Length: 82
Image 1 (cartoon, rainbow, N blue to C red):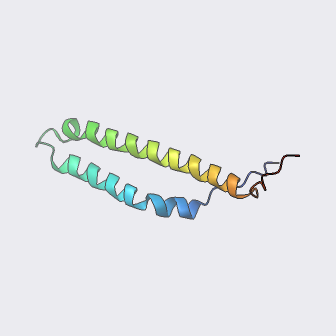
Image 2: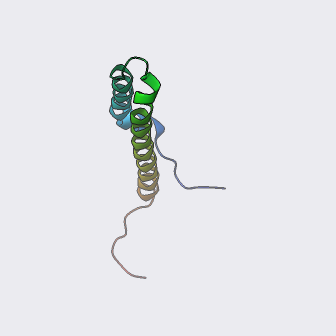
């Protein structure tokens, strides 16, 4: 049985909400700025790059939140060696 504390999902979503909105803006801008007749060709790569950066940020943030939860579950050491 895994007793490692889980990350706070609501907190993770709240902290990433602005990043998600920025992602959607970048994708919309890529599509809007694409030339007529080349919407996919002009917007696919910028959209994919924006998603890749967002994916990395989400994963890193989730890992950090899990580590933070695990550290918070253990009381700090009083500094004495046993």
